[in-house]
Image (tube, rainbow, N blue to C red; front, side, top):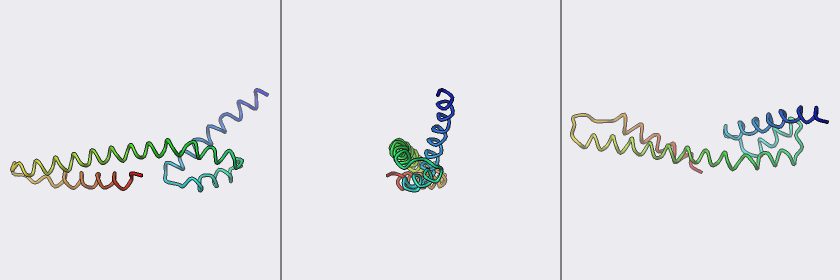
Length: 110
């Protein structure tokens, strides 16, 4: 009996990792469930795996989006402030990079 437990454990870890990678790459929960079903996972187990993983992945994506918004805003405001300080340079790179990063964060926030 112990032999089957050691064989089953890596398969379970593999399926969790497989599902987590699919969800993190942007696949919807229903798509991931279907792909798990194609791998031979029972329907109840596939649903449980997806439900267990969706929350933490969504939280991680939201945290990254908020970080992008903060850093983008700081770059944009910093570039604009230095430009308005009449140093003699226009900090277009910082302003544009910051604006793009801020917008990226806003669009990724769910």
